[in-house]
Image (cartoon, rainbow, N blue to C red; front, side):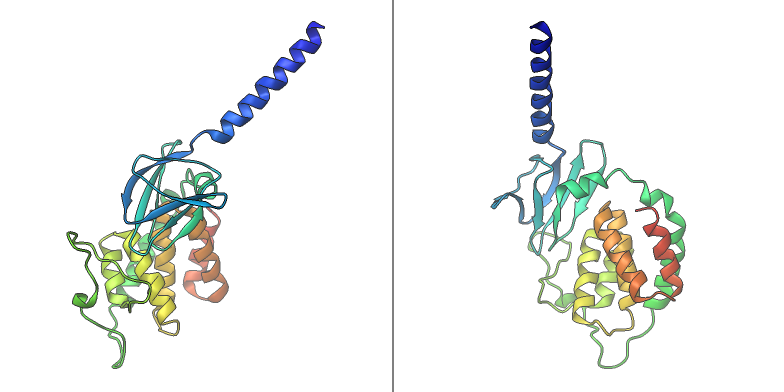
Length: 231
């Protein structure tokens, strides 16, 4: 009788532990800018600063939004504007030391990026002044609408300034709008680097896989494969 009771007690304890584990937060919102929502099941709710986040949720950022998540493992991840991702996937990949293990890749790429991106655009290109990029009232930082034309130079300035959350958004829109531009290759690799800096491994992996597939014989493809090996 005691044995049966002990087994039953262990089962109840195990079940309770599983429920607690599933309900435990995996992180919280440590920085919030713009409209950000989380989804659980079919329900979407607005995110608040310091709000706990859970593995069964999906996070979505608006076109002018940025959110930083501080995970329970001590790491931080930034999700840029116009993105939608599984929190479980972000958390599972948040502890990887990809950034520190691939420093050599970024050092050589930044030299290449600066030399190539300084090349003048041909007449009829999409060069425009920074004044045509909308500035949000009360803020110095720039952001874009999804339907707003983005110049490579504008995204590059943010990239050079290490504003990776804004830069990755700019490069992404530039690639969508000008897929045949000669600098799409540079913009794509730079996007991957931005995601590494933002500690968004799932997105970085997606970008570098696409890069290696599109430019298999390019000198940067080998660098992309080095990064993928760490992801």
